[in-house]
Image (cartoon, rainbow, N blue to C red; front, side, top):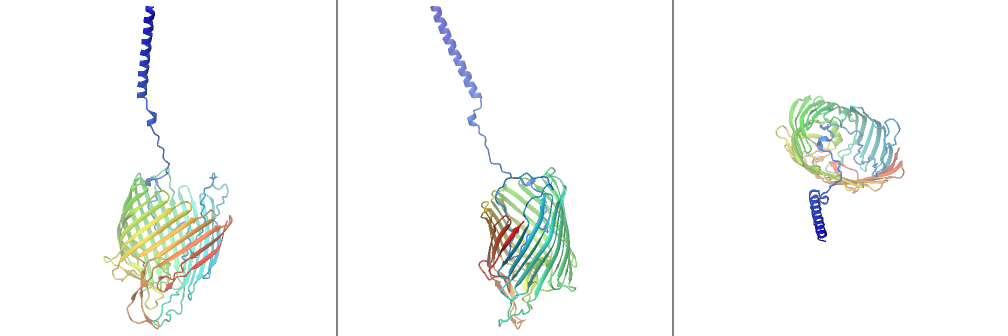
Length: 571
């Protein structure tokens, strides 16, 4: 009995010790093991953002680059085709090139008519069946006639283009013709109210041009490969009288990258000849050669460029110019907020074609000169807020020699002359602000706008003639549905100034000019297109919807409210 009691006590003691050891072992195991409730896996949305260092590395910005498919713009009737697919569609597997014909339906024919005897005809076609070759052509005609006597406008465009993508480089080519006709319909008057311009002569500009470019292809497997481009541009440009211009320009660039370091150069040669200009012979050789060597340090959040712009003017007049080139671009908040700044300079070729495209009422024997930008210091901010909002604001200070302006001719005020201001150290000082914004509210609404504010300190001229100090342009696009699209555009120009003389029987009365204010104006336009079927659409475009009587140049009022409508056939 006693032995049994001792055995029971020993068994109970052994059991209690075993429970204690198990509890200790369990406690120790819990302490050493990671506690899963305190661990978190953080998952973020994937944002496919490329750092600056791995984006396309075409460093130089070829200033004379023509868009591959030209934008067909006709001033009062900017009626580009409204054809944007906004919906998402099922992805299709791309077959091998040349294996089948793809139905892109980018070809179209457009016909329209409107008030002011407006007639529009337009056609575009392109072979886009293969991924490595593309070619096609375009043609366009637009004519209008205003309420004023001989207030006529006519424009034609025709051209063919092509692109061939080869393994190492891409070839682009474009050849075309632009024609523009109008009349000197300006309405200056004598003091008694009679007109000084009884004949209202016709004017016509004919432009035949060619552009070709060879550009290296980007190789993602070799980011440090040498990139290059060679481009040729040529045109012959004539008016109805004796003036004309012939130009042949060759340009190119080389760029070599090694990690964050880039080195390269832009080169250009523009051989330019003019006739019917204000010289003793009536001819002018106005050619320019330039080279722009640079080095660039490019990282994820910064971009620093240092170089020089060396420009030689040769021909009838010779001048050698060296300008500094420096730019800094730094991301304070990558993608969202960048600061940038720099200093540069350049020579802008005086071109009869460029001047008459701005103001087609330039008179005979125009005084053509180059404009020299002696210094341009600029800086600003830019950035994005995702894919829906982008902005850029830039301020600058320029010193300009031979800045060109339009003034009315004293003897024939319906013609315009070119005058220049700024010479050597006495340069025109130009201070300005540029702002740009793009907003994509949704897949249905896109907004954009640009603001320019300019202030000029002249040397000899009283004002920067015909140059407004404020310009604002805004646009909006509304994709109402897959069949209905609406565009709207607004343009505001602030006050400008012109030289005006007084006349007796068509002859200046001998008094000096007076400064005439050209009032500010606001021009609102809107257009819509409706796709009635897969192939057929209708469109309408209204310009100067407020029917504002305004003029960009003295004595030349613009058309009032005008509307254009028609059919668009895609195939």
